[in-house]
Length: 129
Image (cartoon, rainbow, N blue to C red):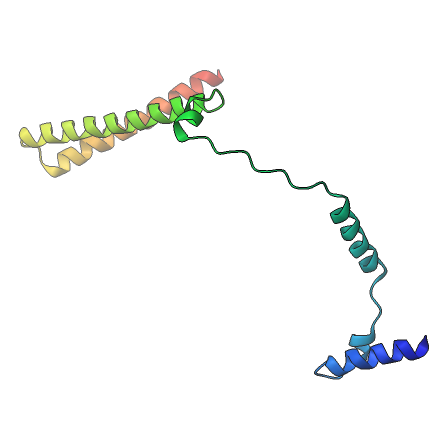
């Protein structure tokens, strides 16, 4: 038994480039052996993997009850974004047609954004009270 341990240490030390026999012949920590055994037992006891469910088409998934709120909210947000951009372009073109300067249009849009922020702050504080 002692000879087998010595030959194992000699083989490991020979593979070690630096010849550090302490590092090569150190016994494994008590928890390491048990962890490997547990992994093997868990792998052997695990049931076979189930087949992945078939993928639905996009339209069938969009019609499902689970995704309906997501589709409604996303579509509404997309439409709002498009119409908000269109209204801003109409206002910008109208200001150009009426010969507003670039500075005047910039101030007008800045005041519009501040009014939006003010409205959101007031409505949030009204809900708190």
